[in-house]
Image (cartoon, rainbow, N blue to C red):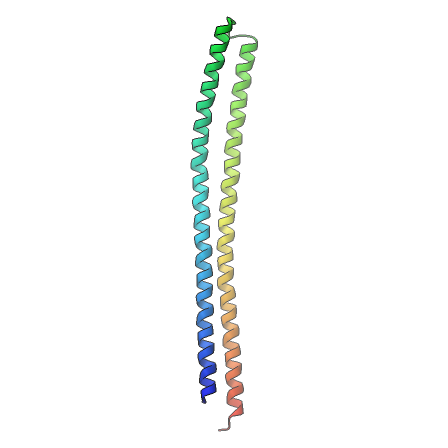
Length: 152
């Protein structure tokens, strides 16, 4: 085996190793991105809890202001005042449901993005393996050509 064959073999081995390292790195980056996205989904859930508590706090404040305004006006808590109170309660339920729905959609979106990040990482790893196979085939072909040219 001549020095050319040794160089071809060494370059092929270095390229093979480099391709494997690139695949591992890209997969690790995408797995990390997936974890970050999952953490974001958890943060969205916690923020939703906070938002619901804040909304409830503001609603209780509004309800109190309404009761005080009705009492100051000398009206009884019947008729229009009662209809307004019922409408406010219905709106409260609607808004809470909307906050919960938006949160669930945002969480589902983050989880889907995390899944795609993992898939992307797997694809990067598989792409690196394909490149390694190509390198082995190319190096083997070059070595065979090198050996064909030499006489034994």
